[in-house]
Length: 200
Image: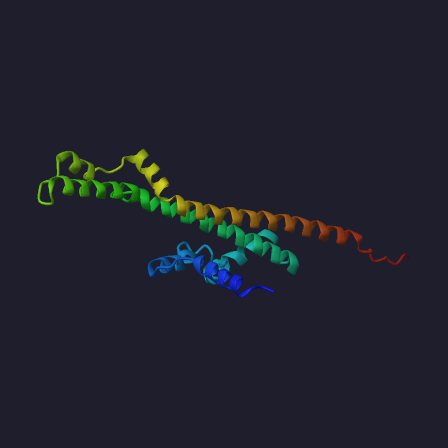
């Protein structure tokens, strides 16, 4: 029997490890699944659902039995999810690269720290030195900008990579299942007794 003390400790541990505590953290975590809509099923979007059905028919044809059609639908769904993850990654990087004023979060903090240091050192009404102004106005050039974007977007890129790997794994398992089902279908067709023809 579990003691009252153990029950209280378990409840306290559960309360301490149940996600974000602040309203801002809760609202941010609530949007995680919707950020790229990759966690939503293909069937939640009518357009993707139609694409999935059409792609499944391309894979096995319209006259395949229901088991093979279901496996083909799983392949099609996984392939569409794979395209969604890759498109989301491309969009994430394209938007950041296309932004002429892109600034990484780290650089924003450095620039803010420089302004605060100047205000503390010289006073809030003293003009900012030229070298600090040059630093504040600096923008990363292409190779440095790309590196800054990759560093800044690591968390999102990792999440997209996980979606992509899951979709690839699902697709590969479904393709193996389709191959197995086709082999079994062929074997069962070969083992069926052939109708005897009447001899004259």
